Length: 485
Ligand SMILES: NC(=O)C[C@H](N)C(=O)O
Image (cartoon, rainbow, N blue to C red; front, side, top):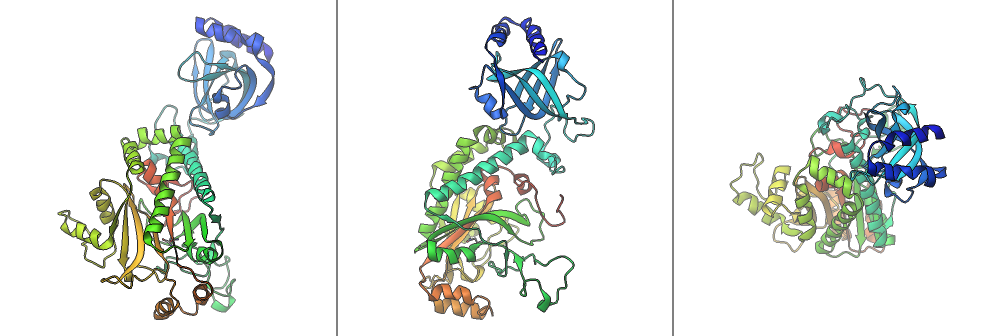
């Protein structure tokens, strides 16, 4: 093995003076003991001069007269590690996509393209890859539409692996954001008996092959996959004041649109002793800003890949969002703006109508292509939990949506109806008084004014990265007629 290393060095010694200077030192200074490093750790350069082993997948193989350049990536970062080896180490199995284990001496690279390179004395092909069958081709840039067809393979592409690292960093940033601000994380249940949003978009849960007769149900009551953790958070905010949850939520919406998924992740927060929508919008804006700043800071290379390749020009949009404070308009003002515009909307607007995506996107553009809070929606548009703005001349609820560039609605929240008599009346009107007796108890025993919101995590990623299709920001998208893998 050592002989092979020497040969590799000798071969490369002939290449150029700069390489000679660097590589000559291999015989004298490379520490013998070998340690395993991730590619990102190797690229940091602190192990230059050491014998190391990296494991990963081949991104490219370039064979020159006497030596071989192999790029290996293990998903820890965007940049691959360049392996330089004697062409004697070439192997028919060493192809694009194969899994390898490489041992050698880490050296500073003479090229500006990478900080270090690994002078290999051993390349082990752990798993070969039939490049003819492999869906991705070397040096080809595959579009998101193409790679989406291979949900089990797309993490091997640069763009999708960048996405997954950004997703992971954003997720960590959300947890640290709330932890730093004294919020307690609550694991709200995935299986629940409530339909928080009241929209009837529920997936019912029953063991497979069981009867659907009501008295023989597994849970005795109908049980569903959660559409929102809000009501459980409300319970917890009554003891911990500030709580949040971040997990999967489910909507049985029969949609294959670029904005909807049947399973998506939602960040939800609930705050006791919250008196106004303004208090709530501050928390929402703070969350957006701090998480985005952390993501841009921690994943700059990955984010740049998106802003340069997937959504050119989007970086300026993100920077503007971070610079300017978010606009706030009421729903009534929003309807005025829409009615005054000469734009031909598919859905006409009158006071009382729900805002459609086309309206939301128009309002964002109207406000300088910047995030905009729309507050005080018609009472009848909002679920039973939204607080009635009794003093408002029109019948509105203290509810707010945050609309953002490229996406439309990113967050939805409200002050919660905390007045027992009003809440009881509203539930009674909907025939839900008994189901929600426990919810009424929250208003009976030490009730505090409170409010909260939810932010769709995938929509958030779409927004900061400029990704058009929500299916491209989640590892395994679920939507109607699609549950591959
Ligand atoms: N926690 C929230 O306020 C989110 C809200 N329940 C929703 O699903 O849109």
